[in-house]
Length: 423
Image: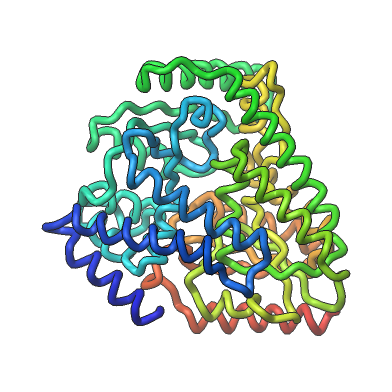
C-alpha cells in the first residue's frame, strides 16, 4: 500500500471511536480531491472509458456522504431506475467498501463491526459497511432498499442497519426460479417499493423521468451487447479497478446520462482496439481484489494477458419495457444469472467464455460468499468439458489483511503458464 494512503487510513481509523464526524470529514475531503484529480488530471495509462468510470464512481460514492437526506443505502441488484425517478442517489455496499479500502481504512471498520458482534466469517464488504454505519461515520440515509438476490448477507445487513438507524426499509424478495407467477409476484413488490419511496420522500414518481431512465438504460444495454461482439476479436487493455468500477455503470447507474456516455466511450474504445493476437484471454468470476498489487499487476500493462470481464458485469443484459416497467424489471431480476441454481451462473460463464474466446477462467471465491464458493466445483466441471481451464482462487476482495498474497500470486502465475503452454 502507498505510504501516504497508509497514513491517511491510520488517521481515519484513529478517529472512528471518539470523533466519527472528523473521520467522515477526512474521507469527504479525500474523495473530493480524488474526483477533481480524476476529472482534470486523469491517469494517462487508462482508456477514455476507464478514466470516465473512475470519475463517475468517485462522484457516486461522495454524493450520499455529502447529501445523505437524498440517498438510499441499497444492494447492487435493486432496480435503480425507480430511485432515479425519485431523485435519490444510491449508496451500495461493494462500492462504498471498496472506496474505504482504497482509503486504507477498511480494516478499522471491519474491526469495529467484529467488536460489535458481527462474525469474522461474514462478508468483508458487508462488515466494512456495517462498521462505517455502526461507528456513526456513515451518515444515515433517507431509507434502505434491497433485494434478496444472490447474497445471503443482504437480508441480515440491511435489517441490522434499519434497526440501528431506525430508518425505513423495504426488501424485494426474489424467488430462485423463473416463472410467470414469480414475475407477477416480484412486479407487485416493485410497485409497492415505488409507493414506499413516494411515501418516504413525499414526492410522486416522475413517470416521464422513469421512461427516460428506461430508454437510456436500453440504449446502454444495446451498446454493451455490441461491445461484447467486438471484444470477441479484439485486444482491449483492462485492469481490476476499471472492471470493478464498471459494476456501478452496469447496475446502480444504469439509466443515467453518465452510464449512457460510459457505454458510448466503451464501444468507441473497443472499435479502435487492435485485433486479438496471442495474448492469454481470461474471464473472471465474481469480484476482483483490485487492491492486491501482486495480482492486479499481472494484467496491468502486460500485453501477454487480457482481463476480459467479470461475470457480475454480464449477469443480466435485459432491456426494459417503458410501458410495463415493473413487469420488465421483475423479469430482469429473475433472469439474473447470479440468482437461483448455481448452474444458472455456471452456464452463463461458459456461454460468455466461448463467445469472448477465453483461454481460461479465474473463479474468485471471495471471503464469506457462500453462494460463489458453493458453485465452484460445478462451474469448473462444466468448463472442463468444453476444454476451458479454471483456477479456483480463494481470497478477499475487500480486506487486505485476510489473504495469503504469496500463495495466490504463485497459483495465478502457474495457471497462466499452463494456459500459455496449451496455446
